[in-house]
Image 1 (cartoon, one colour):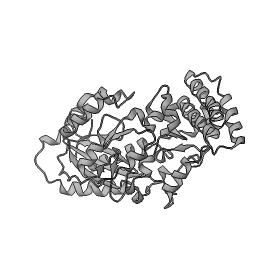
Image 2 (cartoon, one colour):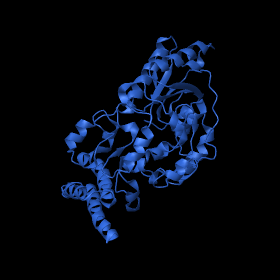
Image 3 (tube, one colour):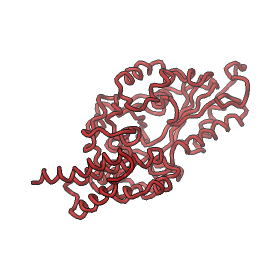
Image 4 (cartoon, helix red, strand yellow):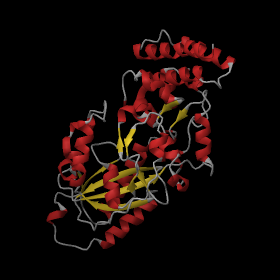
Length: 381
């Protein structure tokens, strides 16, 4: 736990934190955060649900979800001395987005030769952006004269970000399990500062999903098995990013042209008509990832992948899984009725060029993809 003093504030003399709290809200806005709230370090109510989710195996190959046991729901055990959590959110919709951005994203899903990458991953790695700015916020608190022991997080440790954000009043958990805000939808990142400062806490907010189940209905793989319950093993975001081995054959056709992440549940959510653009340029689209063709990305060498994805969250999956994901999308394109004869020939040649790839994982998915042409021929004859 980072600290600016050897003494813990919980043992210090009582003091009025209202001025500091007001400053924290102002500083967070200056650093580009859309909202900032404060909550207690108690998440006892979330433990039963977390354990049931783990017991069901819904975390798949994300072993780190279970490694820390209930520390994920006990901030003061994860970081001893923690009494409060400063929870923040930062919008990531690119500055170049137009009012009809959702319609454009949905149209790309119907273009089999196009590569669909989740909106959040098209710019700079959010881990770096938020962590740096959270550190600056923590430094400002120290400079204010409030020495404190703290630690910053952003999707990088066993932290129940959504539960903390909901408890702090940043929004409510939608039925797709993401946090929702009435004035910003769900296109934002979350981050936290665990601190030993006994700051005044904010109240939680009410849920506003009502009877809507659009996110459950639209999920391509039916990964949302019930309201507020996600089986990550079926989620395309999990499959393309966290899953390290062969993707289950029965799920491959359902992935379409999604090669990294999936935004379907967010695109259909009515609240995302209020999604707000980022206020910083870090999340602007790089490498034309909002209009890239599958066949072009599949041609990247490992060196090209590492160079073009430097500073991007995409790079963490590595070139091998990048090719695995695109091979599936190309196979789905071969079977798609809108794929032209010329495109089919180009796709087959591209796939054949990877048949001798040193990775058995890549070879397997390439062979599966090539087999989709024969399947398509059988269906049309």
